[in-house]
Length: 559
Image 1 (cartoon, one colour):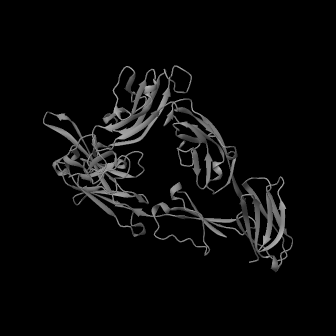
Image 2 (cartoon, rainbow, N blue to C red; image 1 turned 90 degrees about the vertical axis):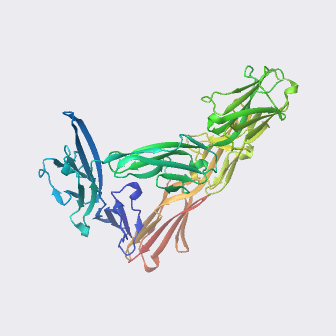
């Protein structure tokens, strides 16, 4: 068996193991990241594998880039300033690039002109060559060319870039013709305009977004960016960047805020001065409503009882929680609860800017409003399932109103199957599709304060046991041995659940050779004392538990 592997690359560039039957690894249209050392490994099951390696160098030369930096000294004799210019040339290559400079048609060399200095900065290891023009003279305003060369290796031609230096050469400056921030409604079209206010040569303008790529529907026209129908996902910081390779790029940013109202929820807090979790006549009760609002400054709340507007009074106190403590939250405190206070209370969340649908939350307060209780049906814990199945973990919740149930892992700090640390459930059921062995463990169901009582959470535990077939090694091995010689094949269990009652069977083709049961050992062997013509073929060792089987396969051949 032949296998090629590659090392000396980053994890993302690593060449994946593969089997090449003609013993030749062919790489079409090779790229620079595919350079490195490749290893060929040959094995036949006898003795140690044979390994040889070969190094692959990929040669290339990118277009060079010239950047310009200027420094202006103090005024001399009150007539002029000393102006020094640095031209920096960089090109990515393999092998290392060799740089040369020209002014017009004149080749510039170190020492050939007192006003010119060519040097390589410390710690750059040949990555760049800098042309320094000291105290600019009239003849220094000219066309400069940087030539990058890898000395025609692999017939790669030299590459050149030019820059025109004049007394007007300057770094870029820009301004945005938009507000900051920009607050819009979903679906609206938005246009951002960026204009240059300086820079020679003329800067190029590009738009970037802090969250990554620009929205797919974005229309760009020079310095103008248009988003035809904006969505919440398009919100964020957008920056206009101007670059002309002189000095540092100029950058101006604006923040786009897309109005949104979502996740309306409520909770009921019984009288905090009494330990009783129930609502009682003559005591205080607080109803809290919360929404996620963007922008939060535009959020307003209105309260209603049985459809009629409520205003804050001595017995009905309406407040808004400090945004730093609980953002987007309003409270209605009912002091000295009376029978006539029973009814349906509604809080309505709105955004002042308009264009967004209000969120309305109804909360019923009555003599039947009681805190929650949680139980797990006896037959639902422990719950035994097989890897790959769909399973439902269940907690029964009672109470009025019924709160949201939060599921989490109780045995360790790991994420839930959906990727979060907690999963919300409105019916008390946690549904897991394609369950895996890593999901074995103890799960906690817990009442949330949301859409229920703001009291000490009720919780219960559910045990999940995931069975999976044995994982074995080797999954495949080729053994070459002549007739009359003996061979021994070994199949080992790496992992399995349940580990008890593991059985094994050895087969040659469809013929059963031997069966048995594991005791304390984790492997089984089968020996052929003297190979004959009928002994060659594929031997399979199946190791079996309640969840399935793992298989070791051995190709025994005399060739």
